[in-house]
Every structure is written in structure tokens, then in C-alpha cells.
Image 1 (cartoon, rainbow, N blue to C red):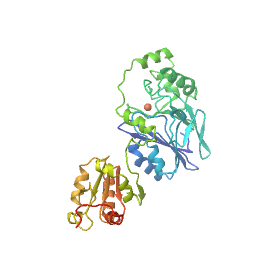
Image 2: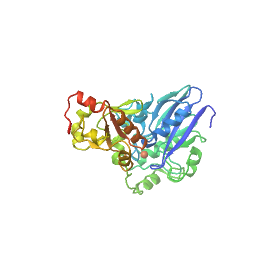
Image 3: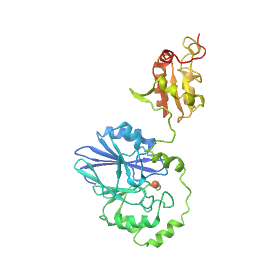
Image 4: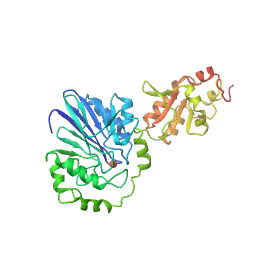
Length: 355
Ligand SMILES: [Fe+2]
């Protein structure tokens, strides 16, 4: 591998997905390829540790087996998200087409359209390496039986485009299930049992037609989320602001979502003491009392980490601590109600059990 580039291969074990970080060593400009929502923290930490400037978030296709980290990374960095124009994703920053180039300092990533596994599949070429997503796997390839897949198109993509690249081109796949990490065009031409040079298009079509695979576990969740830049459907009813690392919402936000609190879509957890809950300021209808300390810690330890929770206290301090504690425990959609019951009362909103 060339000395003036940086390449990291990272693995997400639940979906056996490889995420790649590639960068130009001189300018430190970097791209991340196929990030997974669950491992965004790990990936961003590494980018920071390497002192890289993330410019692009690239998805090789609309994945069916995991939710992309693209939207989350864009929210937390200045990077632009990129996916195939064919995917018609409204929220994407740069819709890509065949032959397009993306600059990383003085170097470039070239987009090669490789449809077949899906109609949105792209391969990214960078400095003698190709990142093939599911078009070409090591001694294999992605399935072609859903998301406008076509074994005929995949055969052509691999033979007409990828196999025409220099023999020593390094192949980095989107997944591997057998522990391989990379291959080369020369090796895949010789040894790929589905797509290698010993196989005709008719052989390949027959192999793919006979696979009869079950649908990926996450397909119904992942595809709609990935068409929305990785925003899991209905993941959050309220969008909080990030205040010193703590997601925060206003009393007005909470009021606007009172129907979600009533229906328990959002849990409102009051972390004050019992004497306060039924004391000077009373409490909000639908609020549950779990006092900051053992009561709350116990609840959080055994709770559902994907639950949407708004924490409330007197003025927003203790509920801020509760939010921080929940995030530390892995909760994804918790937030602090700024200003607490003091602000709520100022807004002359109804309360219960006020003394
Ligand atoms: Fe895929």
C-alpha cells in the first residue's frame, strides 16, 4: 500500500460489515465508507485520534442488513453524505454517478457504478484500491434477489468494470463472513467461485437463481432508514439541541408532544424526591417518579435503551445528570428538559399534586 495514504479497516460484528476510513496523508482529508450506525462513536474517535478531517461519508449502496451511520456522522462533523443518484435519497448531500470524482487533498476517489447486487451499488476506487461494497466479495458476491438486483447486471459490472482494473488492485469488500480482509483483482479473477473467469454469465445466473436465501433480519428496518440517511423510522419524536454534550429540549417542545407522553411513546421521568414531586411545583401529568440515585440507576440498568425519555427535575440540573447517566449506559434517545418545573410553572402549564 502506498505511503501517502491512510487506510483503516473496521469491523461491525452483528452484520459482519467492514467500514473503511481512507485519507490523504498530506492534507489529512478523509472519507469514511459504509459506516454502521451502532459503531459511529468508535469510528469518529479513531478519525479524531488520527487527526483527520472527515470530508465525505460514502455508502456503497442502500444496505438491507444494517442502518448507515451517514446521517449521524453528518450531524456530528462537517462531512457530506454521498450515495448513488439511483437511490433517490432526498436527504443526501452529493448524489453520485458513474465516473464522478471526489477530491481528498490532491488525490481523488473515483466512483464506479457497479449495479447488480442492488441498482444503487457503487464501487469507490482510491489509489490502487477498490471498495466494492457487496458487488464483489472475497471469493463471493452479494445476492441479487431484491432491491432491483440483477445477476446479469452484476456479472457485467464485475467483468466489464472491476476485472478490467489492474491485476494488483486491492479489493476491500463490504462484508466478509469467513475472516478474510482483502483480496486482489488477480485473485478474484482466478478463484472467485461465482464470478471468476472460469464462469460464464449463464453459469452465474444459474448459481444466483439457486441460492434461495432468507431475507436479512433487519431489511424492513434498514432499507427505509437508509433511504432517509440512516434515520431509524420514528426513532425520535422530539429533536433535542446539544447543549454541552447533553441533548436538551425546552418545556415548549415537551408541551407540543404531550400526546406522545400520554400515549407513552415518550416517557417523562421526574428525577426529584417524592416530597418535591408532590410539593411546591407539583409534577407534570404522565410523569413517573424515579429519584436520581439508586432508584433511577436501577431503572436505567434494566430499561430499554432505545426508549425515548425526557428527564425532568426542579430546574434542569439533576435531570441533566440523569440524561448524562443514561447516555453513559447506552441510551440513544434520552434528553433533558431545560429549566425544569420552575420554567414549566412560569409558562403557567398545568401540574398535578401541587402543595
Ligand atoms: Fe448489501
